[in-house]
Image 1 (tube, protein in one colour):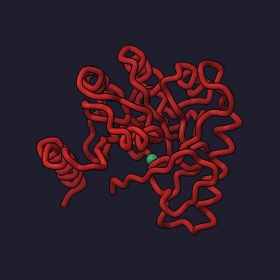
Image 2 (tube, helix red, strand yellow; image 1 turned 180 degrees about the vertical axis):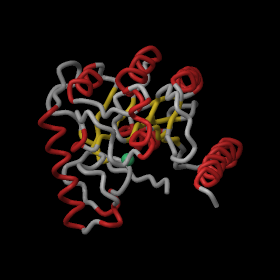
Image 3 (tube, rainbow, N blue to C red; image 1 turned 30 degrees about the vertical axis):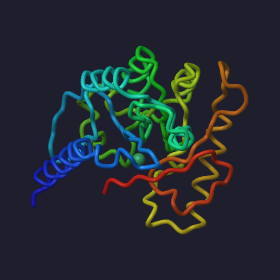
Length: 244
Ligand SMILES: [Zn+2]
């Protein structure tokens, strides 16, 4: 199968899986464990370049705005680190949703944060600390690597520490670790994974501070990607997702 065909097929499968999950949610509505949805976003930008040879992992700003409006109206959005306690209490009659953003694009600050603020939606952004503040596309962002010379920087540039601090200062945003180097977990030894976890945690805690509502060091959560092999190490939350 050609690469564009593969990407179209993958996106179609994800779309159908999402619709199926929504359509069948009522079947599990009586589970004593409760249910929640973790929405995992990456790039939110008006990318302009629509090449199909690499996956852009993108949601347009307008589409995200419509999603946020729907969430504010129909769901109870909660920070990811509070998901389990909300599930245990099961006090909400509305769907529980946690919004997360992987990889740390600067469009989170300029395209996402204003919308979060407008609808008072909390979110968690997971950053690979090595690339925060880099002027170049992430080495693992194949789409950004290919089109950055003909796309606005908002579409591909990594977020900076001052931009992250602006997000944290709203008290709507938590910053989590998405490792330091964004290595593929299955290629790493246990020791390398532990090193990735500790280095990224220490950098986040040293570079960000909570000047507003929350005092003390910033909340550091372990993010999606590869944390199933890593013990807590003082992290407050630990989650895993897989997209491959
Ligand atoms: Zn990632």
